[in-house]
Image 1 (tube, rainbow, N blue to C red):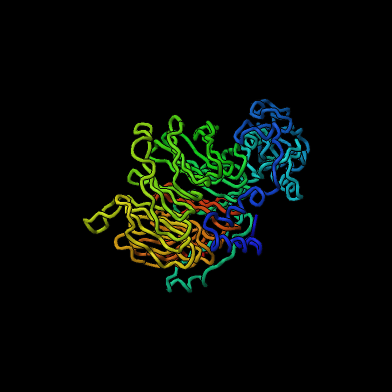
Image 2 (image 1 turned 120 degrees about the vertical axis):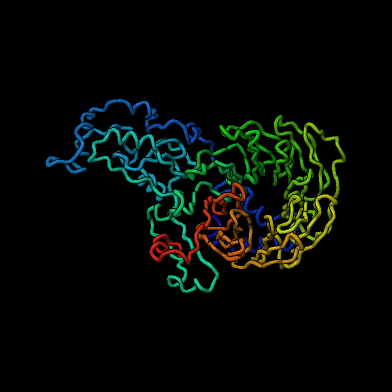
Length: 591
């Protein structure tokens, strides 16, 4: 990875500074880190072996390739011991009992040749005892000890079938398997309030991390079985994009892969490997059971959401595909650095139209009011009709209007549909918001397509925008988040706390969530009783937090992707720290 605290090296810092202030046509800093020469470590990977082609949820096999589940029901030579479990005066010690047994080969770790106590699968599908394979990797090896195949990732997946089989076979005095290893063993968490009456609580805020190997129960939220946070390692490079269904999180990375994560268990269930260069963006269409991914390889890949199998590849772009937008569950729009946007029918995957109008790389897309809005490094926002197979691409002109006014690259767009204002009969919207390197945010009426406000206040590039029912939030390289009232567009508040650029914003569960180059994920209250207070600071990623998403504004978990390749699962801080007893607070490591 690039830095342990989200800061670039001196060489990268120069590139960053140049890109932040001197480049309108390219996000040079990020693009350099995502390119094959800088963003993908180790150059090209060798061809995968046959063993590596197996899925992570394939049949559990031992070192000899035999399906263990076919053996689970077989009777072992010592199966009579099952009826004689228990201690007694003549009970042997575990070591003695184990030495007197003939351990089936499929229960032995291929490295130590001893009974596995914590069996885990690696990328090739082979199973090892966790401490043994971890030692192998700690020695610098990145290959499978049995096959010698180079591993594409170093994820360890508990082999529940082997554990069950060992438990059924082994006598009670030797079957004390290690508990499943915690997914989260490195994050430190602070939960704090900026209110003065918490300053002296429990002697202030502790920044110490939980003890290594601490029980996962120690990090459980009081009202749920899920841990408050989980950091899951898997990707080898920057996570560029995340998207989610109600049950599955998808992450796209510069390591050329897409990972599918089961939200309930917080574990990777599939690795999608078809792209040949970094994957930059994702979009989900649940109605048609499809996942779309855009990449530096100039293609859009289409995947089945249920089977994770690739359906097809959509060629046509001549440069990186940087943004994807699903419109009305009927049309996919793809935006590229080749200055064009392409519209596809989602059901048939046929090309409807190639949209030309930008003179620079297209960076971002949103849809509202039957229009598609695209933001580009050419400093403009273009408005396009919402095509569909039924309406057809011939309805209206291709380019509805070009929205001019920004003096720098447009990197962020957000939209707000027409809604009734809170506490008033007056309707507001629809709006489209654009954030630019010129440090300003422009507000466009999505019906008249005219600029109605220019929001000034940031002192550096505006990098990210998000909106809820009352406010527009803008995050900037100036390390601040500005809160804009949607009724009069005055600056309601300036949120400070991050020590580096704000890269990601997400609204959910009455909270604003922010991710930054300072490696932290922060929760800010937006309800009247906690308005704009920092109610949670999560320190877990080893590098910048690049992207955030959730399953919706009413969800209780937010997901983050980092420059260090890890994925974060964060639960809302649902309790006021001032109401916690000292024992609970200290035991959970929260304050």
